[in-house]
Image 1 (tube, rainbow, N blue to C red):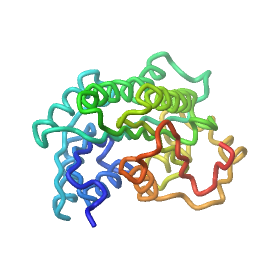
Image 2 (cartoon, rainbow, N blue to C red):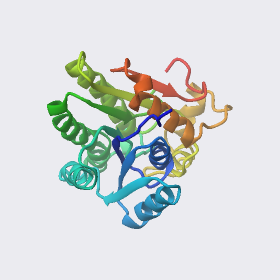
Image 3 (cartoon, rainbow, N blue to C red):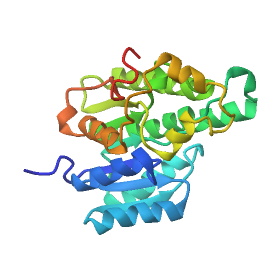
Image 4 (cartoon, rainbow, N blue to C red):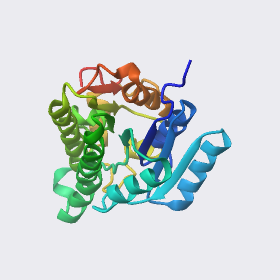
Amino acid sequence: MKPLLHAKTAIVTGASKGIGLATAQLFAREGARVVLTARKQAELDEAVQSIRAAGGEAVGVAADSADPKAPGQVFGAAIEAFGQVDILVNNAGYGDMMSIEEYTDEHFDEVVQVNYAGVFRFCREAVQHFMPRNEGVIVNVTSVNGSLPLGGLAYTSTKAAVNAMTVNIAVRFAGTRIRCNAVAPGNTDTPMARDWAEGKLTGGSTMVPFIAKYSNQSLPYTQPEDQANAILYLASDMGKAVTGRVLVVDGGAYIGA
């Protein structure tokens, strides 16, 4: 049996750690050539080496998802290395726990540029690349906070906005071979998520008490590999009949979100 992503090329943003790294490693095991992108080249180099050491094909491209030039840079590098792009996973994100009265315009815009504007630009680059071939897949990594907004106002709002963007793109390309879906992780055992839950992210801990009030925090965290498996399902032919959907992966902690 061929690997699920045999001969495919995938771009994964925020791929140097956590869910992004787990996804890139899984995609490589399933036969994909993977282009990893994140801000820090040293961390990317380590992630790429982990994939190559396991027999996979990967390159790393340092870029800031908030930079309007990043999508063109990353897609250009991917095409130069592997010829085309078949899958985009928008995983890069910025979390916070700030309440509305704590935001400055500058910090609000910083979150929006990474979590929303950056995702938009990468999606736009992807569909422009996919349309001539009438084929391609986008998976946006959002959050349960997109439907149950317990974290920082900008963070939760951008995740809800990307859920809506996902559906809008799917509507645009329904009936074609271009699909767009989202995975909405719940608590996942990553450094950022641990800091998020403990109120250690920028802006402090104002919203932290509401997490336990409105969700079940007694359940175990999911693992990055759990999220990667869901992303693989949507990115591969296993999910070829699925588009415009947001798949919650949370171990039941946010049932009803």
